[in-house]
Length: 445
Ligand code: GLU
Image (cartoon, rainbow, N blue to C red):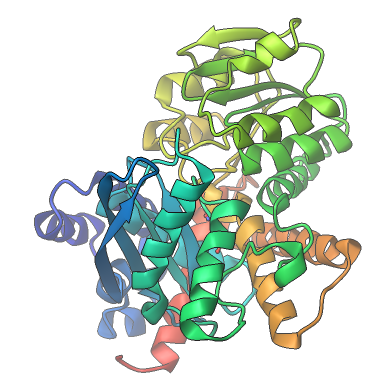
């Protein structure tokens, strides 16, 4: 395989899909050597087969708002790869959603899910629907209209969607209600369900918890820990919330959160009731973080800025793709940041990743470091199959073990001769080998 040749070909076929091409390049760069050392991969055209989704389903979603006006949104499900198990991955509802973003997310999901040690393939879906300013009734009608199209394409053994940006407990509830009505069965067809109707304990906080568990494992390789560390978090949604809780529990001091409007610096530490407030703020259906500084006047709000300019030991980007660029990475390095663990999907640009690796930071890429969310979704699927609910401790212990196993896989494939662990390379190779070998086992399908 020649990475540039494969990418040129993809670029010709899918012009302008920049997030998708960025995600593919990163993986192919990492696996190029091991791929070329194993001619059986090339003869089965594994790369050509893995970079394209199995299928992309697009549909129209028409719905009526509270005033009686009709709206039309686009809906998608990208079923990427099911060599390891049913397609699995979230739904994103955000006005920025397009095919390039969903293909990048689906591609990442394939490798992430492979790392979880659980039998899950990869997929992603969503819509350009914007929940901001919409009433609960409007969100419900949209979700119902979305499921009216989606339900025929999914199933507990076929494709199991979940949440992502803009899709939380409320949306999963509305989606599940409609699925159940149409399919006339209660099955584990979605994850992130409510605790009373098949959901798993720990699922809401799992991505953030997993991210901090992964960062703690990375720190351990240098004899270090969260104890006494200053931590910058971006975002203020579910991932950031879980990360703030766990980082605080492990002795860290979280000093920032952020929104699309800017960031909050709270030198007293974002803990206790301030972490609860993050969820209230999110639930108020307003995409802005600035009200935090009104609620807690010792905190400062910096409009239209990102938290990476603050001096911290650990950075946890938990907002969205490409939110941390090369200059942000340089600022973190200059401020002696030692560890960056990605809670979001691909939040660091390629320039930022290069800066972290050149400066030998502990850098956990999203597909490893944020795999705790989908792992706990996998545990929710196991509980649904067993028709049992595990205790909080049981789920948390399993999640913690999975994050340790993912870390170990990265160390196995990412450690270079000088002892430096390149977690990007490690995660990509470990994820890829399992998928490629499964595809070889199953023939050309
Ligand atoms: N959207 C989350 C992710 O990016 C979770 C997916 C899931 O639970 O299926 O991994």
